[in-house]
Image (cartoon, rainbow, N blue to C red; front, side, top):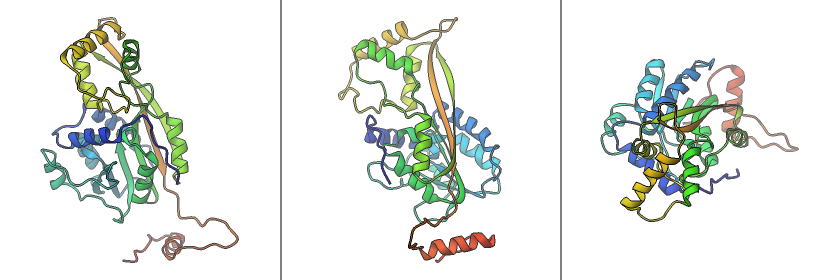
Length: 302
């Protein structure tokens, strides 16, 4: 399977930011808000999951996790995550959020019992190789299981990007992927029936300092082209002045910025046999297909 590396994304910076969030007691308010909007989309699904995987729950939203478990009271829940540089699933985190993991669900690992749904809120745009992540999600799902995800779109914080460009500074953030490209990659990764949609939020702030605080929570600057050294107090003061002077304002004087949200879901199709002159089918795949034809769940070889 081909890779689709995001050339402007610094994988180590993204991984470090997600690791930092794992040690916090609360998730970003924006991620929690997006998760609640995703939650309403779960009502669209005709098949509610009996077993589901929450991908990076501390990052995606701890409050949202509780809402999901309340919405799916009889479903079994597992949690999981990734480490881009190590190419392995994340170990249980340390810090205050450890209580959440310890008292809640087991950690999903490759080869574990498959799930009916993978829920991944606001983490896809921080993955350097999305195709690798899609492969993991597909591995986690049973046939006819589905993934639901959200991500930031390319119009996100375009006003801040324009300020940085006007000041001659390096990129304020890496480039975000368009929703049509996500749909194409899902198909290439072997998913079926991808459905993508987007919405635009306008966020307002009383001042630049409050905006900068939220920018750090959203993911910081994970661009490879970002300034490679520490900035001083003088530059920070100049950043605040530039944002105050150049960002658009509402009628009552609030600074405003745009956030583009992308939502998607796709289904893992049933096991199919590729057509060729001579076809070789793995025993496990043949058992899965026979069980599906009988209307029974696939049996494990274990």
